[in-house]
Image 1 (cartoon, rainbow, N blue to C red):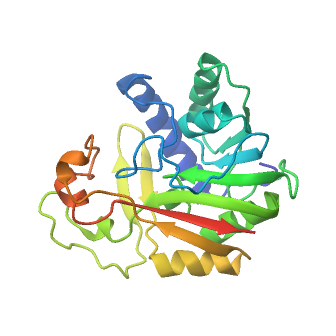
Image 2: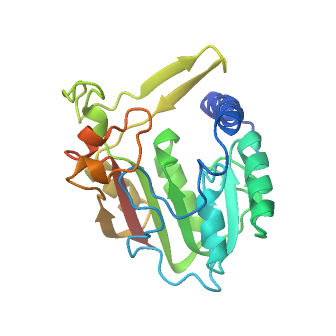
Image 3: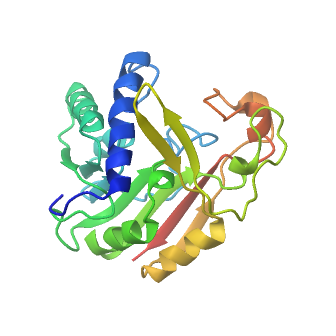
Length: 254
C-alpha cells in the first residue's frame, strides 16, 4: 500500500498473519479443498449460476486467503489476480497455486485501497467469506467498482447476518439483527484481535447501490435436512444451518 496503514488494517493484518500460520499447520490440502466454495451451506463446486462463463475473462479475488477459490476460477481458464492484506496468506496461496500449476498474480494490499490495480481492468471481482472482516465496506465496494470494466460483475459471500444472531450451542437469539456492534475475539496466541462486522441484507444492498452497482441476485444456499451438511466448522452447526441459512451470496453489476 502507498499510504500508511491505519490501526484497523494493522490489527487485521496481525490477526490474519497469525491465523494463517496456525491454519496451515492444522489443516492440509485435503482438508482445504481447492474449488468454488462460497461458504457453509453452499455446495462445493456450485457457482449458483452467478459467475458466468469464465474462459478468457480477467478476474480478481478480493481477500483471497489461500486462493482455493481463485485457483478453481483459474482452472476454468480465467486470468486471475488474488489480493490479500496478509503476506502469510499470500505465501500459502503462491505455494498452492504452484502445486496446482496455475499462473496467478498475487498482490499484498487491503481491499479498500488497491493503488497498484488500474481502473477498469477486470470482468469479474469475486470473494468468499472475507468481507465480514472489512470495516470500511463502502470503500471496498468503491474499489471493486473502480477496477471492474463497464458491465463487470461483483460476486461475493459473507456469513448470513441472521445466522450470526444465534447462540451456536442453544440456537437462541443472543444478538440483535440490527446491532452494528462488531463481534470481537482476542487471541493471546496471536496477540491480535479478530473483529467481525455484521451488516443486514438491506444495509449491504444499500452500500452496493451507493457504490454504483445494480444488485442482480441474492442467494441463501442451504438445506432443510441437517444430514446434508458435510461438516461443522466453529459456530456453523448442521442443526442450526438447517433452520437458518449460514451464508448469503450477492451478485451485482457495474
